[in-house]
Amino acid sequence: MKVFVTGGTGFVGSHLVRHLLTRGHEVVCLVRPTSRLDNLQGLTVKLAYGDLRDLESLRLAIAGCDTVYHCAADYRLWCKDPDKMHAINLEGTRNALQAAFEGGVQRVVYTSTVGCLGLNPDGASANEMTPVNFDKLIGPYKRSKFLAEREAENWSGRGLPLVIVNPSTPVGDLDLKPTPTGKMIVDFLRGKMFGYVDTGMNLVDVRDVAVGHVLAAEKGKVGEKYILGHCNLTLKQIFDLLSNLTGIPSPTKQVPHWMAETYARLENFWSDKIVHREPSVPLEGAKLARHKMWFDASKAVNELGLPQNPIEEALGRAIKWFREHGYVTS
Image 1 (tube, rainbow, N blue to C red):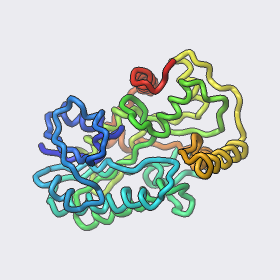
Image 2: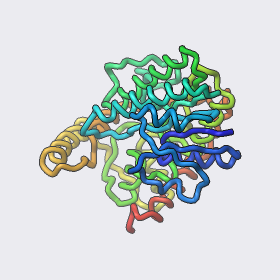
Image 3: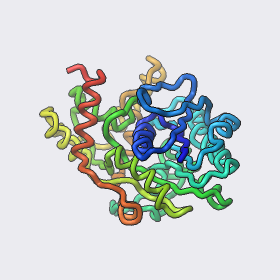
Image 4: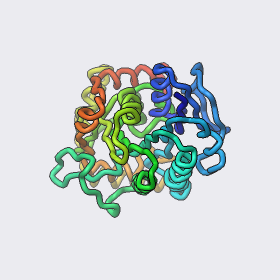
């Protein structure tokens, strides 16, 4: 089978490409001329040069493909130009799905995020049906991805055989940029975590997320969405796991949310207006930390067979990969 992947150079996408290759598929990856190809080195894939904002390049790349995995997204908690993020995440999704529709593909898997889903006021794990209030979505990433998910639903309603997956917080190797969660792991390894806030997130092995994409293509119901997640952990529990794996002490001081947000506001102003660099603690991240991002992935486990490998193994691979690739010098 010939499959087309956007975002194949990224964290989730590169693991998806590897899993597709192990299953014997012919893989075509959309890449830009400026893309870092590190995560595709040594893999037998066809590179299709183009851009999500260029519909014609997508039409040409998708021609002859049976399945499309649209994984690409601009994922950052700090964004100097929200319009650019909007163009990639929303307009790019519209273009990718239009090209897939015109190309008559058999199945599309659209990679959304749990950030597009609602949260329960009582802190209970949310699922695919938990109501969401757009006005309460924090930051351009969540808002652009929410609108892109609605775009995917619209194309599904027009007859595109599409399934949506909502990964939670993937961890593991090949986190090239790194993602915000990967940066948190790197900062821990560098001894820069002096405290923690009362928050939490759902962690999942990035390799399980890759498998989940293929399972969604093979077993998912058209028009449905599936949370690809695993363990609900507090931030303190995550730091404790990292400590157990590395021997680096886990922070013991809990920082009030108001203090974390105040620091983030000051540091964001200094970084953006004075020294003109990306802040180390994005204000959006501090705001998001007020909520425990806990989710229930049982639908994907029961209907798709989503694997639930130990999160300690994924964290261990992340630690090893970051150390071996120079993100941590000591």
